[in-house]
Image (cartoon, rainbow, N blue to C red; front, side, top):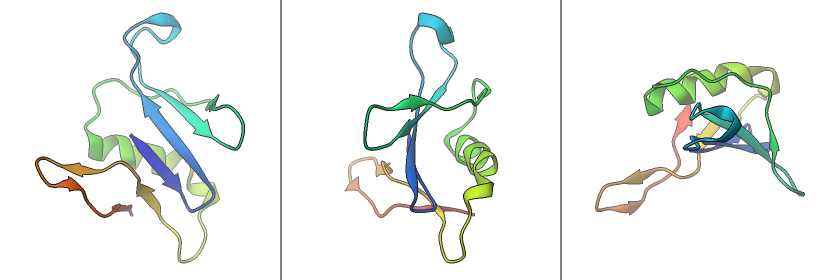
Length: 88
């Protein structure tokens, strides 16, 4: 799940199948260079909505008037890409 954080940077949350995270979701901050791990302990088994809310809460200090956290990779089954959705 890729989330645009108030138009400032992108956080990509992935769930690896092994390695050091032991399957726990990890957040990568995508910047101009290589992605780097965000210092977040993300709970397992969150729904997409709960995961967006969790990340939105953790990055709330970056909030700016008129800006929102938006999902950048939202898809509707059989309908292709739909418009990005904001997280309140």
